[in-house]
Image (spheres, rainbow, N blue to C red):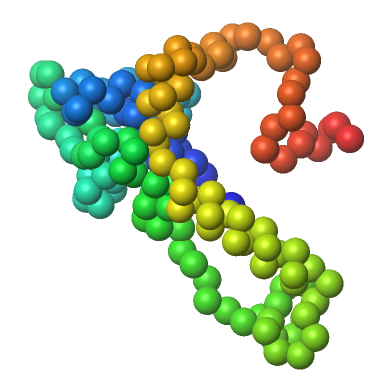
Length: 164
C-alpha cells in the first residue's frame, strides 16, 4: 500500500494530530521520533519535506518545533501518500504476462482492481482527525514498547516468517 517513508510520515503526523490545539503546541523532531520509536534523523528529514509541502509548520529555537499547518480533519492520508509515493505508469502485467488492459485479464486482475479502488478510497477519505479524536476524546494511548505481546491480535503487517 505504501512504503516505509510514508508510514513514518503518517506516524509523525499522527503524533502532531494527537496534540492538535489549533497549532499552539509544537513538538520537536526528536520528541516525535522518540514517542513513535522512529529514527530521529529520518523524522527530521520527513518533517522538512512535510513542511515544504505545506502540511506542517516549523519554528526553530527554544519553544519551537512542529505543528500541523491546518486542522487534522483537513489532512488526508492521500495528501501524505502523494508526497512520498511514486505512481508507476506501466501497462505490463507482472502476474500474467502481457499487457494489462488488452486481451484477457490475468487471473488476479479483477481482484487487484477492486483492491486498488478500496485503497484509494481509504487514502482519500481517512484524515488525521482519527488520531486527534482517539487521543483527545477517547483517551487512547500507545501501548509501551516494553509490553510483551502474549495474545496477539490480527495485524495489517505481514506475518512473521516463522509463523504459519
